[in-house]
Amino acid sequence: MPQPTPQTPAHIPIHIPHPLTIAMPTTASSLQPPASSLFDATIPAGDGFRAEIPAGARFRITDLEGNQAVDTLFFCLPDTRERYDATATLQAQRRVYLTTGSRLISSRGRTMLTITDDTCGRHDTLGGACACETNQVRYSLDKRHMHACRETFLLQISDGRYGLGKRDCAHNLNFFMNVPVTPEGGLTFADGISAPGRFVEMRAETDVLVLISNCPQLNNPCNGWNPTPVRVQAWS
Image (cartoon, rainbow, N blue to C red):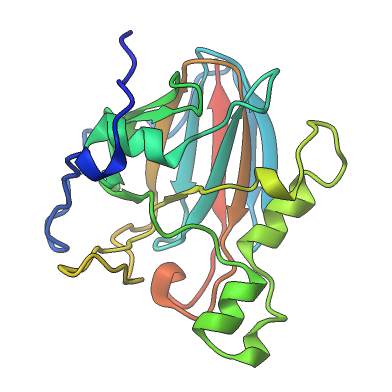
């Protein structure tokens, strides 16, 4: 498969749809995967998750109660120095929101995963992960102590098994999260467009490690002011 040609960011045409223009969900496949399950887990609100997904496997995240942001990082295996690259992914898609057909591109220009089914229709690539520091800057000094996605990511890699550290928690994807881009080029955190039972499904194009923080944020509407559990499944 041809890989995107590197371009100077200033010359990359980016498609930014109107905030009210949402891609329609595609036809959903069955919510029950085949018997060849690799894992099937429920991530409580504010908790984290880590798993390996082999090439060719399907990976699904289901928004169980609706409007729950799922912060996600992907790394290639066995060399985790190759990881999901937000800039390369935007270059390949020519748009800031991901949906069916979108390819997640690595820092070495390879396709890591392809979104094959999506009943939400829009997933954020720009908002990043909340952190104690950003909670303090955006909201107030007394919010610094609140748990945040960056801390969840760090907890998931704290055992050192994959040789990952703080510097590896780079820009992430936010599945189901609604971050409209303003006419001036700014970002806003808005009410989600997801609903109970909606899911996004991907095919792994190479062996990958997935890290998830089921966002605990309470200071903006990304979780509908009420963080809830999500379900993650993978099968071969």
